[in-house]
Image (cartoon, rainbow over all chains, first blue to last red; front, side):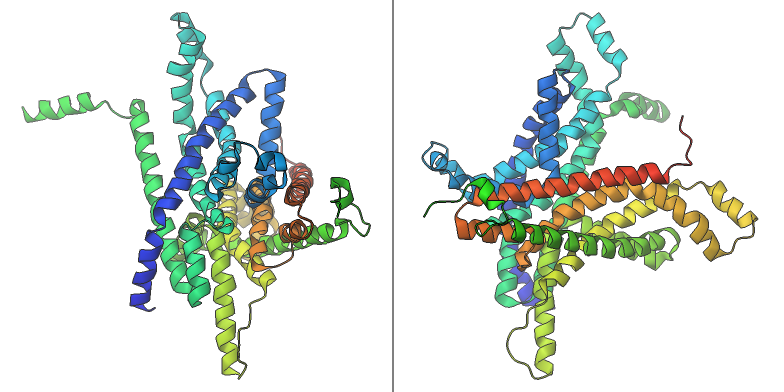
Length: 241
Length: 239
């Protein structure tokens, strides 16, 4: 391996990293909101909402992400109504099309994860909250949602990693994020292995950090599974005294 | 020129793209099946290395699954397609051919899909093997079965039964991943739709049709998988 070339490759790939992170971050944030809405629709017990959410999940999980990206980026411009609408400046932009496709896609997968979390909340907890006189919305905000998030977090972490990986597809619609730059370098220099190794290391590093971050949040959210810190400190203090 | 309607595109007539799209769908299935088969072979070895390999093999298998689950599949396709072309070109130069020789897209695609799905196959097989009761293997030893007989009659069938749901999920992922192979120029379903979209100026119609065909393939295969699960767990008592 040529060290100088590897260094140059690393620098040009790292300069594309902010775009990858922006894509993933925006898509995950927008997708999470949509996913929560879909999960609530699934668990609402209202037939129309339930079936809408089911159909949504079926369609977005059953088709390749690349088809969804093409449908939004190339497909929508087919209609003059879209080209003349106020949304055109957004829909013409490859970046926003990629964000939209990624958000819609991750929402389908994440909604099932969140639904699992919502269903795992023990009924007794909700009953207890009701018995305390909490209104429905407060029960949801203070009891159901926090418990569901804690339960869903490991699965959600995996989905976030898939989203980081999925941002690479944006390179196919001309966005120069990490994979886009890597593809350009490979086709210019034909040194596939060096570029691949450097790009791979960057993606592995992001995903490693993300996994650690999710683990940290999980740790913070489950104090009930550990010995209380105060008690532990008290014991230590008692020992030293 | 009048543009053909949505249903005209789906016809077998002179304006219709049905034949081309079906051929593309067939190519998609072929790529997915070959990639899946390659992945299953890699996954078998990977699971074996993780379960009963020495330390070196175990570390190698762990590194393989960690790396392949952490990097985008698209990168693997680029590596094999461009890397393979570069390798073939330099080999060709040794034999006196000059100019660029491109690596076959189908091979690069199937290999890339296989290598990425191999990591998932490994985990599925490993988990399924763990679910096999120790007692069943002990009973086989007590009956005096040899190692290979034990594997063939007891371990392999039981592992496969436990692995079926996971294998179904991997198949769905592989099917969708095969769409990425279109970047190598192999005329599979998505590439065929791109060609159609380009020549008729109706991208929405073509990508919609492609999406519907993918949906149909994945629905049919998930029904088949459910049937297979029911068939292979006939002897299992529930509840």
